[in-house]
Image 1 (cartoon, rainbow, N blue to C red):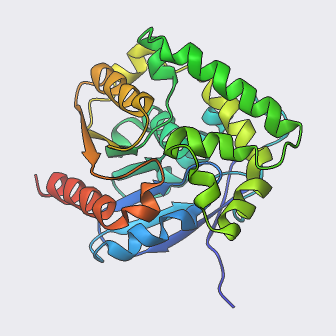
Image 2 (tube, one colour):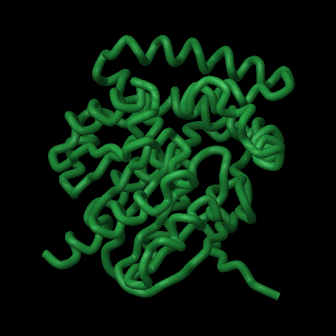
Length: 274
């Protein structure tokens, strides 16, 4: 029987995580809805020269849930990452996908020099558009408010609205049945994360303090708003750059795992050698 590693958090909850490899530590943060195993295909493409931690965010996988009606949900998720990171020797890298990139960003602000670098893959950090006074923020808020209402009223396949927004019309219907079933079952948690993404409070000053290397990755088939988020983040962080993966959409961890792995490994290893 395999035992899943657990961290006992200061508030009494437990955080589960996977661990593999040896070398510089990189904590990979999954998106919503998802689990640490979302990184499986990417990890298969990595060498053994990295130590990979793949936590299940609170409420996902085998991790305990946040208390009901937790305020500032993203920050609370980040607090769990902060505790996990603080228990690791030396500096770490943080890598997050989608909503997990938001959580990783919040954790990096809290951790300061404990973080050597940050890789944000298709972040849904809509707060960046708000700070940049980009009109897409309000249109996105209206769109996702409608999605949340429909999902919370138990509309069948409502989560497909969110998937199609990020991946293109009809993407959800083309997904395998087991994937659609997983997403539908996890829709209630996803709506909490979507709400949280519109109530984040990081400011420009917080982002400017992140003078560590930051790589922001988008797929070139993702909607325009993904590139706008990446550009807005880049403009507010002193050592950030953006890059695109050809042919990829928001779910590039599965469709372009080799390219994602190469990008992660090149950035982490290059920085470690300097």
